[in-house]
Image (tube, rainbow, N blue to C red; front, side, top):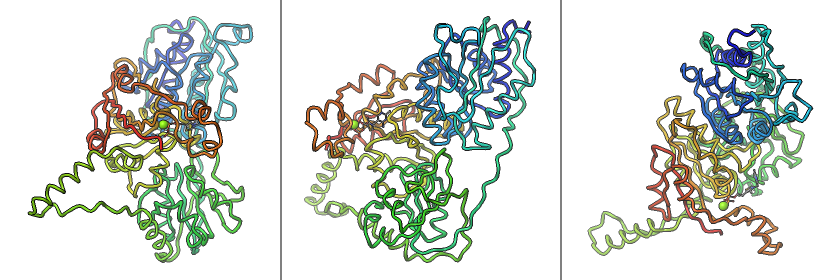
Length: 555
Ligand SMILES: Cc1ncc(C[n+]2csc(CCOP(=O)(O)OP(=O)(O)O)c2C)c(N)n1
Ligand SMILES: [Mg+2]
């Protein structure tokens, strides 16, 4: 018989202890009977101060919360679920993690062999449920009353951790499907002594490819690119096209108005070589450029499973280095200047505020008030959110219009920005941002995490506004641009050709949810920002979860 009265509990304690020894610090779980041994062991490790545990009743929320935690910490996060549909609810987050290269370790509880295939309650085939999206799957037989080999939990944890962290293939989600037999748990007698985290060493070092200088080169940075793209653009003297969530949107070579310039013969037309980092998804002009037959494309492998190569003929490399002469600035400079000229917005004529002329002063005050009372446009909204965000903050964009509007307009600024662009789903955005907020606060950041999303994107993930009992509430500001439905579809050709009523019913999908009541139902603070003045006030750093509603016109 097992020493503690339940092999399920003994095995769960040993397995979690091994993961913690490897460096895991975050566990997310959802409740269930079959997974009780894992859940109770996790609670004990939390009480011992060895991990941070987050409990969510909805596994879809839990999956995205874990994704956000892993995005911020860059360490594998454990996700514990019971059997059946609970496991399937992880699928959206698993797909996003797979496509973005985010490490997750799923511990899915299951019935033992003798209870499978006979119509047992809450039992389905959990192996292969995620298809090729998980990078490692192991069906682990129920620990028996005769015990298990003491090395076994360590071997399993080591293999799963290394596969999730991407030591031999890209990082991503992995699954340990763990069968448990009655008795499903017993009191946890003692926790193992967990040695200091040592991680798993390994993984081959990247092969660095030397780049030759070449004129008419541009650097393109999509999601997950990171700051290396900016460094290379500067060294090569190349214009930098860096999407808003690329982690490279800064520096002297940044070209904000890249869509217009790529479409211009004098600029885009002259490009002969493109070096791509990460996963660009926000424009049509980038794929159009890379599909041109006169362009040589070099793709620097990113964290995700698939590299971006729309023409299927790029050269793929691990990393780049440029050792040539300091580059000429003329080529990049012409792009940067043209971009600035395109973006320049003429300020309204206002009198000099230092004047003694009382009439002029009154006129100035009126003009200022008018600015304050202006209703908020999308451009104003994305610029305001960008302006208030600093390096100690975090910024997360939902999929849909606002991330594109931001990408068209906001200037260079080295701030941490995330968007789930692996599959660009409108699901799980609040959960992902919650994970990022909690992990950044746990690491000592004093900033605010802001999420900018559309109304349907918020409603898709409203369940993420519910926290586990007694858990810390993050400094999370969810800013919803409320235009009453999915207005991204208004820009599609079908909006002109389909019957208006049907188009609205099945694509725009109107909603009139009372967001104040929604916030109150979940115990969140709420602010309505109806004009520019209210918006600036509402975006001040917050101390607890806050929903900021910004009404936007449909057009
Ligand atoms: C999970 C998922 N379902 C459906 C879609 C398709 N989709 C893309 S944008 C969108 C509507 C978004 O509406 P909203 O959040 O209000 O943003 P808006 O376009 O109005 O700014 C939908 C349904 C998706 N990307 N992901
Ligand atoms: Mg909308």
